[in-house]
Amino acid sequence: EGGKHKTKFFASALQGYDNNVFLDSRRKADTFSEGILDAKAEYSLSGRWKVFGGASVHDITYWEATDANLVDTDLRFGFEGKLPGNLTFTLLNNPEIVAYPYYGDGTYFGDKTGLELKQRLPHNLFHAFGYEYFYKRYTNQKAHNGWGGRSDDKRIDNRNTFDYEFGVYLKKAMLKLSSEYFVNDSNDRFRDYYDYQNIRLGASMIYLLTNKMSAYLAYNKLYKTYKNRTIPTSADSTVRENDHGFTAIAALYYDIYKNATMALTYAYRQNKSNYAA
Image (tube, rainbow, N blue to C red; front, side, top):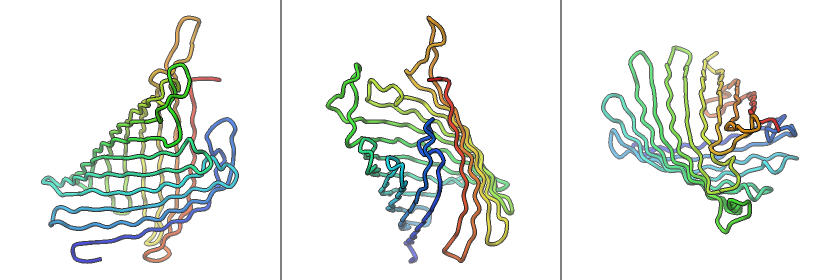
């Protein structure tokens, strides 16, 4: 770490159990191991502007449900600057390769480009607005024609995401409300479940229990509506298929020493649909 530049390195290892890996009626349960290696660097251009970059590798290994195994390798670079009115502006680009070693159709190259505008408000309040464009090109999966046959084109998804959050810093806690809306569009003309819009509404809290221990709670409500996928309600009418669900997370963090933290985490997720197969 120098006067104009800073570097950070992060490593994490997790051992867990998932009682429904694919979140479907099969309810396949399995243990998993998860590891993250991350490196970041930033360089100050002036007192108000800086550039940054980084790289990370994220691995998830299931011991039986191997179709869910993945290795996510990504790069990040961008710049951040302070604007008048306690505003911070960030522009980010994040190319990545997500590989599924045992499920080749899931492997893709992705590129995320986004911006974020944060503002500190009076009384320890803050809020932020963000936009992200996400391009995904699947390396092995072909898009389908309208009649269901495989085309010569690789499947490509385009996603536009808007998000907003509002929160407050308290003496021993941070509370935050968040929202996200995105639209996913695919060139697959037959599989209509790739085209949809998604809404997420959430709340989270971090609370400092002691100087070394903190608690984290989060709840997110999810709503997904498919663009062209419909289900019959009677002999002559249909409605759009939609899914809804939620995720809940509770965690405890304990600082073993300055640069090492131990965590205990529980996560629950649920998904339901108005389509009864």
